[in-house]
Image 1: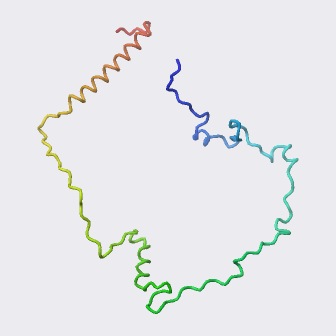
Image 2: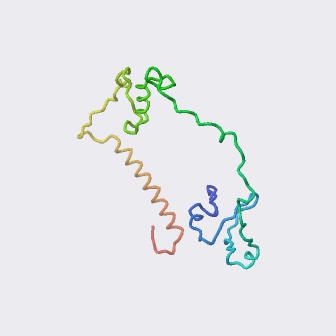
Image 3: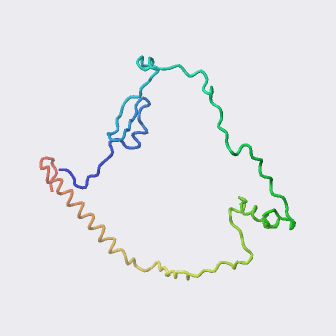
Length: 172
């Protein structure tokens, strides 16, 4: 009997593809199923050696780099300090130094703002029930009922399996 809940399994799993021998290959072409084949070793096969062409003598012969618009431009000068001790952007030197510290790995990207308040918890703390070790466990009967149902189901399954083979010597 075939199960209706059966799921399709790929012919080769990713793990099986990773464990392919070094001389095997999977060829995938659009429109056809994948092909598992042996790799062509051109240096061992006489048919492929016939087709080998010698390497070109000079790959760069006749090629010159194309001109671009950027090579002829002068480099942009570095920003200099302004009147207020900052940079040309108008930032004071202290702010610029603080920006450098923000990127510091020692601070891990965290910084404290002097104008912000300390963190306040808005949500109330959940009340913890006092645990009395002498109180009986209230959920025990529910757990026992689940265990009993599971055991009864397993016993019915075993009894059904035994009844299928009457010649095995096991009696009910």
